[in-house]
Length: 195
Image 1 (cartoon, rainbow, N blue to C red):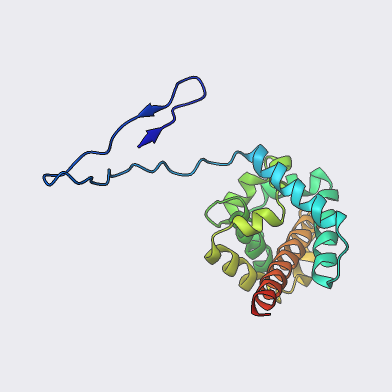
Image 2: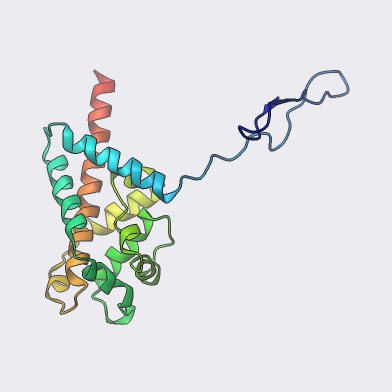
C-alpha cells in the first residue's frame, strides 16, 4: 500500500497486514473519498463546457435552445436574482415554488424555496451553473427536476408582479433546456454505441 500525504512528504510504503495463514487482508477504509470540487473548479468546468458547446457547430435544436437559455440566465440583471432572496414561500405562485426547489438540485441543496432564496443571496454563485452542473447531479435529482419542470406553465409567474418573475421564467427555461440537451446526448450516445 502506498500512501501519498502531500507534495511535501515522500511516499510512505506500508505492507498490508497478514492474516493467520500469511495472506494479506484488506484494510477497511483504505480508499480515501474522492476530493471535493471547489465552486471555482465547478465554474471553470462549466465555463469550459459552455465554451466547447458554443465553439462547436450545433446540429440539434436542443443545443441551440440550451445556449439561448444559458445566455439569458447569464444576462439576467442582478436585481432579478437578488429579488429571489426575499420572496415569501406563501406568496409564490405554485409554479415558481417548483422552479426554485428544482434549482436547488443544481447546487446540491435540499430542494426548498427557502434554500433557493438563500442561494440567491450570492448572485454570482447562483448563476454558477452549466451543463456540467446538470450532469454532476445525482440521477434522481436530474429526473425530478426534468419531470417537475416539463410542461410547467409559467403564465401565472410571468403575470406575477414581482421583480423576481423574470429570473424564475429564465430559470425554468434553463432547467427545461438542460434536461432536453442531456436526454438528446444520452440518446445520441446510445445510438452510437448500437451502431
